[in-house]
Every structure is written in structure tokens, then in C-alpha cells.
Length: 355
Image: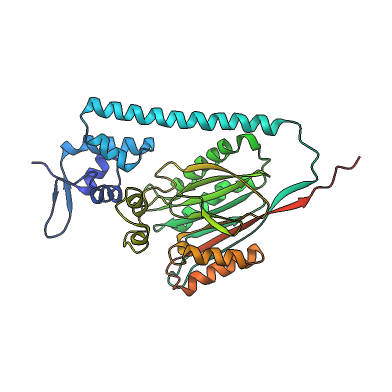
């Protein structure tokens, strides 16, 4: 029998060795043989078709649990399952399209002569932590754009910096409120290409990205990876992003509890990053008094949400909040780079134009 090493098999099916190891652990694509002495994985050419199917389905954005179902079906039934999944995607897209049309009509109407407007007060702080020598995080806070990127691999710092730099034009651009999600999606596509340019053509280098774009009344969210966005409203803390990690997928499937996930040895293993998956895009209505937090996992992995809520609640200003949060992560050992962006939604009085 012809055996392919994991490296040769990865090149043939265009899946990275890291992805193949993950799919082995999730029992999605098991190697044909594992060397008992070295633990090295070997595959056969007959497995290439299934590997390519997995890669194509991941490009569609299909969840791993559903990919496992498709791969277990005969071809005709698998085709029906893919057809049903895509119909679901199109239905969800249609709902978003209708929402976009509503927003365009609503925002294009003649504005009322309100004297009160909303704006952001913001601050960002990034720290290498207590263990790492280099800081691979990038944090940005501006009047329109808030962003956190957590790089990984030898070129992690340039990757995170490139991702955020590619979005910075949004901080000065005139944002068309009715088309903000499409605008953000296009900007993220540019950020993805920028990261690919510095990643040296390998999945070893990459970055997460979590960003909020302010329209004046709403915040458009883009998220991929395990950095997080939180909303503090009325004293309650809500996480408004979903971790794209192996451990979170196991929680979603009921194979781990949230408590077990917090101490799992592979809790930092990503399922998606900026160049390897489709980001989540959402719109959030803002209210006066809201406080938003973006953070890398250097905070969320070591500081409990209850402590995060208390620090956000007691800090009088965004600058105080970001420094308190970073200090809390370092007090807890600071095993990773830690970055925070905090922004408050505040009311201001708009002066009428001069006659």
C-alpha cells in the first residue's frame, strides 16, 4: 500500500498539517496509520477525495458537526444535505438583505431636528504580559473604528498589525449607515489579503480579528477567532461574540461543559482565523450609557467574566478601564499578551448649523 506522510498529504489535498491534526482529533478525517513509536500520521491516496470534500465544505462555512454528517453519507444523500445547508444559508442571507433594505429606507428619510446625538469615548491599551517577550497583539481605538487583533506564529506581530492597518481608513471615511455591513465585509477582505502577504504562504502565521465600526447610532461587528467583544448595559455584561475554537465547538456539541472548557489543555486551538475562515458579521443598536469592551484572549483566558464586569462597572472612564483590565490579567500571571479597547456610548448636544 502506498503511504503518504502528513506533509505530502497536506500538499495534495490543500489542507494544512495543523488542520489535519485537528480533524483527526475531532474524528472527522482519521489517518490510515499512526506510527506506534513516533505518533507520526500516514494517509493513503484513497483518502484524498474525502479530504478535499472536507476542505470544500469548510470553504462553504459549514460547521464541523454537519461536515461529519455529510462525510458519512453516500454521494446522493450527501448532495441533498449540502443542498439543504445552502438553502438555509440563502434564507438567512435574504433576512439580512431585507434588514439592510429597511435600514436604507429608515436612514435615508429626512432626519429629525434632534439636538442630541451619540458619540464614542474610547481608549486602547496593549501589554506584552508577564511571560512573553514580544507583543503580537494590535489594538486600535478611534472615533469610528475599534479593533483588536491577536497574531500567532513567527510573523504573528506583522500579521495582526497588517489586519488592523487595513481597516484604519474606516476611521476617517464617511460611513454610509445603510450599507455598513457590506462596507465592513469589503474592508475585512482587504485585511485578509494584507495578512496573507505577510504570512509567507503558511498557515503557521495568522491573526484573529474583532472590530466594531460606529455609524453614529449602531455598531457593525466583525469577528473571527478567539478575541472577544463584550457589552456592559445596565450593569449586566453580555458577550456578543462566539469563540471560533476547538473547545467552544465541543461545548456547542455538548461534549464539554463551560467549566471544563476553561481548563482544557487545547482551549487556545483555533478553528478559524482571518485567512482560514469566514468572519461573523452583525449589527448592534447602541444606547446611551453602553460600554463596549474588545479584548484578546490574554484577558479572557485568565480573568473571569465576573471580574471583568466589576472592573468595567467601577471604572469612571475608558482609559481607567483598559489599564485596570490589563493590570488584572498581569496580576493573574499574565501568561499571554493582553490588549483591551473600551468605548462608551455618550450623548452630546449638537449645535444647529449657522444660518
